[in-house]
Length: 634
Image (cartoon, rainbow, N blue to C red):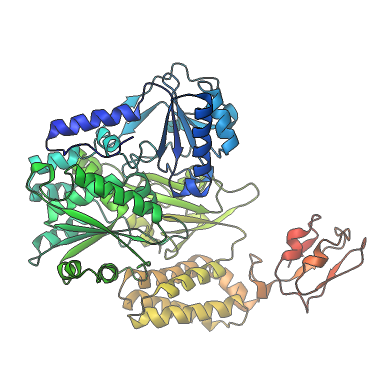
């Protein structure tokens, strides 16, 4: 199947023809099998699953459509396989093995209830406002299967940024156009001046979808009014969280939305060149966006004289080592430009030129605002924090992944409904919002809403959009130490408060968790954190202060227990705990004897064992292998 148009798109009729081609691919006459092939799906085994589907169809001599798609955010259920049969809706199956995939194919047009997660009775398109209803008159033999809109994880989601993720083939320009793609660009180029479009961005209240959440209108106006040329736009993949970010998922699942957003931004600001940076750790995203750039150029939707309007804008992909060592925008842009230095013409065109950097999530909002209007976008979320945000839910939850929700949703809803709560027997203790550089919020403040102002007032922030959930087994001193150590390692080192302050705070926290600190350590931490907030040159340094201050604000009793009582309430810090054997439970099975690295476990077969505290290094290996749960932590 060709995924690039055969001819240049010059007018609205050409867009309509391309859209018709895309609709025939999206909604074929016969059954269609769709595999989630974003990075999360591939890591879970989607490539093997897709191969099994194709082999089974070839064996059965069935000419049904097989198509890849992107990530829908249900990462805990990967690999996902969808089956769309006309008259039966689109059913999603989760955690599909190659063997199960063959069973699903053999069962078509019937379904396999034991693997089904939900079904799609139709697809929304927030860009066009159109809902395409499927014929579900013969849904099949799955009683009680919920449609996506009624499933707890998806009930409150509003997909603006991720509007196409999981619905189309990310390499197909025709499918993107069939869902309204590039209609916003055509409308703006033909109907609005740059100033009029900037007014729409201002009316939307759109803010940067990464720290520090500045308003896009103000940033674009500064770039528009800058005298120097050429002007440049940058797109950077957010890397604050421990795993793949929604920015990566977006470039893997819907790259054209980012390209169209940057092209609209270029029209509004006068920029004529754009750069999309991806670290070397994101090969799939680089592959997808590179293909999209090529296809858009071939179609006349990128490059010179876009849509025969006389307006030109070009984009190139930059890859290299991570440049997330500093959050200050100019530092990130400088890091990207350093990667371009071998190309003399690019270096000369970038040097000292005015520019604007946003992450992929921010750029993907722009086409929707252009098509639906700023007032429509401003009605989503809160008056000060409009629109949606892609939240990454991780940690001690049962249903990790990402979800796009209106700003202003409560932390409690994110944890309990969207992420499925915690495992049975575990209680929630806190969340860290905004990634490793975000502040902590205790469980008794989960009524707080996830928006810029509320979280900032609570000593945290939205940052990268990650919500890391901690259960009652978490030591907040250790967690603060780990977060701060990560931030210290990423400090660019330019300003003294961050370079030296983070290092000293890591040292103090290390003393506290090892039981060697004294009472003044808390005051020292507070002083250093305040110094970072006041004197750091970028958001990363200031955020490091929030990590410490929020942990002290809400969990000071844990710090005091470590210092005054030499006790870790969570029984986690190795220097402050002891492993002992409950002799009433120990049956002398001996499983712990060979696993102990220091020979601290002693005892005869059939008799209760003991742990020699002078040799124990608190590794916990004995506890992990004890079937009788006789090893306890004190």
